[in-house]
Amino acid sequence: MAKTKACALHKTSVGGQALIEGIMMQGPKGAALAVRLPDGSIDTEMKEVKHIRDKVKFLGWPFLRGCVNFIESMIFGYKCLMESAEKSGMEDMEAEENASKLDKWLSEHLSKGVMSVLTAVASVLGIALAFALFFFLPTVIVNFFNKLADGALTNVRALLEGVMRMIIFVAYIAIVSLMKDIRRVFMYHGAEHKTIFCYENGLDLTVENVRKQSRFHPRCGTSFMFVIIIISVLISSAISVAFPFLRDITALWMAVKILILPVIMGLGYEFIKYAGRHDNLFVKILSAPGLWMQRLTTKEPEDDMIEVALSAFKAVITDNPADDAIV
Image (cartoon, rainbow, N blue to C red):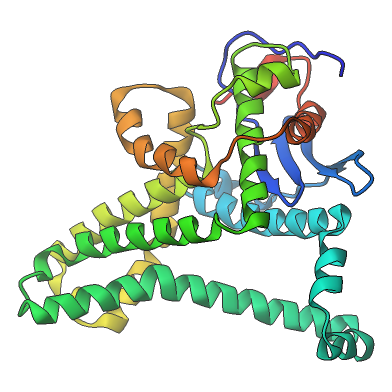
């Protein structure tokens, strides 16, 4: 593999997402999707990324851009995930293994439009499940114990809900990490982080150099999720103290937590960007839970996974380090 010289030590804004047998990277040249094909070769394709902030400028302002970027990243990331599954042959293998008479009948008799509707319904159900697990369930559990304690936990209800949300989140990640396919995705996640660290440390972009890097990076979606939980605890606690009547009605309290989500995401996004530029005590304290969680969400990658990460990374960087520096 040819060596590509990285720049001098600096913090880069290049980021990515681990996929099924692949990695998506975004940098100054755009987004690149690299996937290991069934024949062993690497398919690297540039992807068009459209940002609503390019048309609606104020949506790119600090504290507003966080929520917008999160939604855009979720949509784009899901599309890349589906494409990586198709290219890697994962969908064909799963279809062969899991195909039933009903599955075959559906695929033969239902139109693509109907299948798209079913996919959309499945996505909505997934969102509903996430809401039930991470919003509704913590509230129900805390309410149950608060009744047992005759209301003694009311004043710390928001804090306890945040703790429960963290416990559920960690348990969920720990359980899914036991799945073989998810473990491989987490290995690609590790390859993504290691490649970015190699570039930031000013080393040649080779498999050997990438392998030596840490797989724990502060600018990670895992860290973002934990920062979001921490900020949500602080804000919801302040609201529950200032307006105690809100927390007494479960439906109203649920609505409040949903309404403050854009604010929380905005603050979390700005912190992650700040963390990417700084390495002070404040950053280390807030980043610590997310970095610890990366022990679950990242695994040590194999060399062929690092090759995929390098292919995606090289496709999105330029020869000018200033183009991808964090600003």
